[in-house]
Amino acid sequence: MIQANDLSKSFDQHEVLKNISLKIPAHQVVAVIGPSGSGKSTFLRCLNGLEMITGGTISVNDHLLQATDNKKLRQKTIHAIRQDTGMVFQQFNLYPHKTVIENVMEALIVVKKQSKEQARVIASQLIMRVGLQEKEEVYPSKLSGGQQQRVAIARALAMEPKIMLFDEPTSALDPELVGEVLKVMKELADEGMTMVIVTHEMKFAQDVADRILFMADGQIVEDSEPRKFFEQPSTERAQRFLAKVN
Ligand code: ADP
Ligand code: MG
Image (tube, rainbow, N blue to C red; front, top):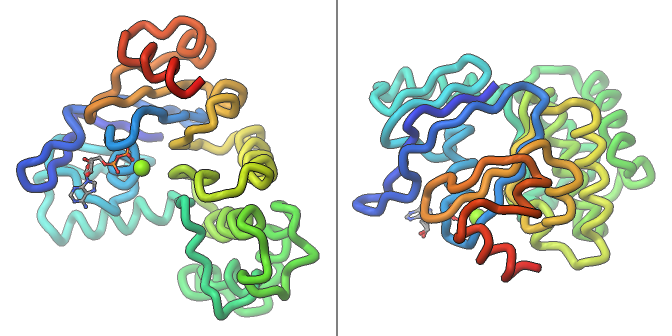
């Protein structure tokens, strides 16, 4: 589903991702962990074209993006990749002047060209799926952070993505609200969604992910099964990181 070959990304002279190669098959749930500044967000953003790679290639659901692509081809590929990926950020970025259901309907109407009636039916199902059926007509400011993030997930799902990317989806939440968001994410994982999740929730990563990518200094330093990673990390870098977060 996702394949990176020698992917690199520089901002001016600063090389933030260094020759990353990996394959993520369909239905796999991958947790990306590592210290701040190691390139996790940049990696995720390269996966859906929010940042353009400066070296190598990346392929998402058979849409191949090469650092050498000209601008026109690149835009076309990124557009195709975006159709297949949903992204959820630390900040929920809901439209404040739209209700919950209108937030979820937006992409259905604008991007999927559905009628308002059609969009409302589907949006309503998605809102039910994240457990917010009572909140359809409410504005985001009336919701807790956890509820807002669940709306953001429903909104991303409206595009029927084949891959969901999460960048620290619970990091902005009060501790007591983290669980409800992780629960929705676990349900998605159980339904077979292909997911790449940058997270500091080690227990969640251990319980839900099929695979851990540990990043440091722009590289994937470890790529292993959760149990192996958490019980016997093979690098000193990962051992140090785990000692700090535990
Ligand atoms: P992480 O998500 O692991 O904390 P990031 O991917 O956000 O790491 O950042 C990795 C490095 O890239 C950091 O040194 C950061 O300062 C740099 N970086 C990220 N985005 C930009 C940008 N738009 N311009 C310049 N440098 C950036
Ligand atoms: Mg980050």
